[in-house]
Image 1 (spheres, rainbow, N blue to C red):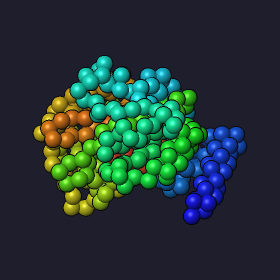
Image 2 (cartoon, one colour):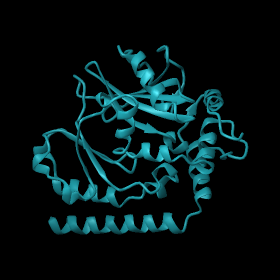
Image 3 (cartoon, one colour):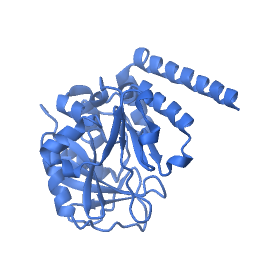
Image 4 (cartoon, one colour):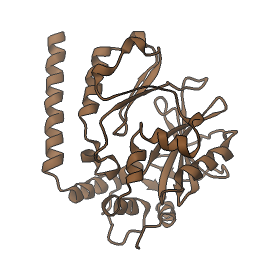
Length: 297
């Protein structure tokens, strides 16, 4: 059994290596972005005269650079920015940050925790019961994260050159055992819409609201029919936090949690859905494009 697992891990390692080499040395980044865009949105990408939100994001991906955005895309380094801007009380509890899996002392970790790739997006390990965690498999997966160059996967310059590390934080959940994520889209320091992700790692549902908590008949990737989310009691504070964290950028998505009366910072996202996330209807993507003001255009 162990021999079979080692062979499988070896195959995955070779696959990852080939993928990294191919994407780093053999792919034209613009052509790759155009193919990804058309596959996701069933239309041609337009960054010569962008009007729609996704096209403007693509323009920013290829024609702009902000070192502060790079810092704030690092899930460890962004903590200092948040502490400076709004205070450490909004940060989730940090258990550790690791440059190698060998640095992790599994025995000292609490029974529940979350691990994330500090230099990437979407790499998440949720542990709800350490006694049931397969540490061998977890170690293998974490090593994959550390080898990954996320910039070569998405061409998002905010991830280019980030130190490859793993952060370990407190596991968060509400009374139902789930977690609601409030993704606040800010333009020039002003919150415009809130995408609410309910039970993201369970029966995932999405709904979009304006800043007055009116439900919008729009979909960002998808919308769940007949679903609503309760207005957070501290919505006004969440919006003020979003203003403060976003005022240094022309556009950023501020992700927050609201749990047991406490607002907790999640992350800052500069290229929502890697600039290929469907937005419906098209007129609303046009509205989002109008909010996004590009420099020198």
